[in-house]
Image (cartoon, rainbow, N blue to C red; front, side):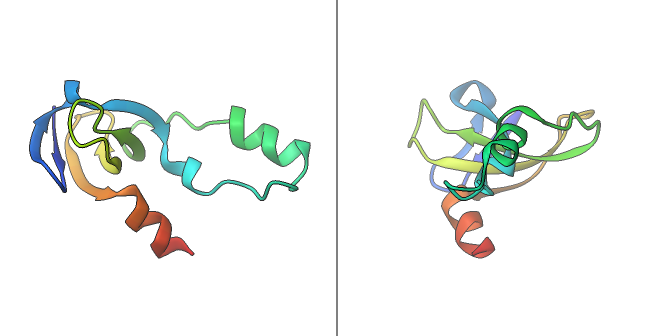
Length: 90
């Protein structure tokens, strides 16, 4: 699988560190309460099909990326800088 880093270009996925579902970009407020934080930290979907995941270009520029990909076919559909995605959701 290859990932198109917006800063470095096309790279092998072994240069990247998989962090998990991009839901981490939508963190609860610090005072949101234990139940909400518990759900945010521990409850995850495991869908077959399209997902949005956080990856870090660990062996490259170090950028955090949101990768939209298919977990069944491993096809990568889109890659964006996580900072851009976060800014767009505010």
